[in-house]
Image (cartoon, rainbow, N blue to C red; front, top):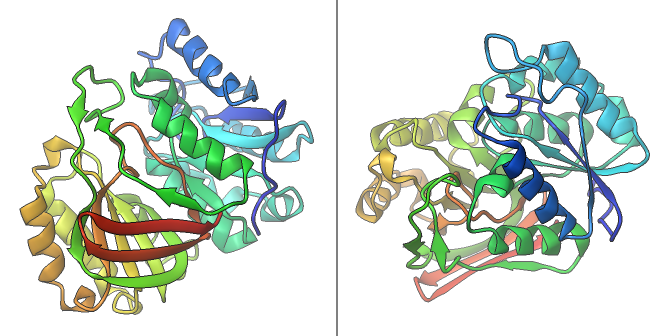
Length: 322
């Protein structure tokens, strides 16, 4: 179930299903984030509890759930954007009114910890969701055009979207140092067309074995990890996916750019993937702009992707259903 596309004048609601407004997101940055969303033709509103904080930097689970349900039930709200990631989104999964979601399909976008909500919404209601920038990334980053252009193409139009490398990137949306981007990295050659499933790798692993984990059989899996996990931890996390009963039935893999703190290099990514015999026959591409670095493309959870990998100069990632 693909949610209705947006049009000029539609309202986007910013809520905090995981952590609330971070302390360093100043009023000036919040205003900048609003203006950037307004540049897409959107009207911006905020959930009632986005500033509420307990000892875990979140509002209470019930407050966060209320904001989520209110955003989906409000007929004036056409899209929902997470404030930021965190570590508490899974507290909501058993209490979400999935029938409400089915009756009111809307764009839901976020990254990192929001992987769990995106997966739960898709598994339990069939709603296609989106792994893309949260409000804090849009407000804090000095590189924004690529992110906004991807949101516009994905959320406003039905035509297929081709993912291309950003020309420059930041190791974190808060960083000042602008880094020249090389290209996507061709790790394994091949081609596939399949349903797109994925998100933050650690957060996906949190779902393993429970009712909210998605069907990964014959999917194109997109994964990324942030600076909290080093390259050795990433390898362990990927092995956990392989150990799943359908871990050897994945059709292709898209890997987001790693933050420098992980210590992950192209050589290590290549060695890691090629050491997994389950992946030897499928296309794999890395260094894609779908991670905690900025800018960031928006990619569907439950959409459809066509992936073709020949070499670094000939990599096609086409989101054909979003």
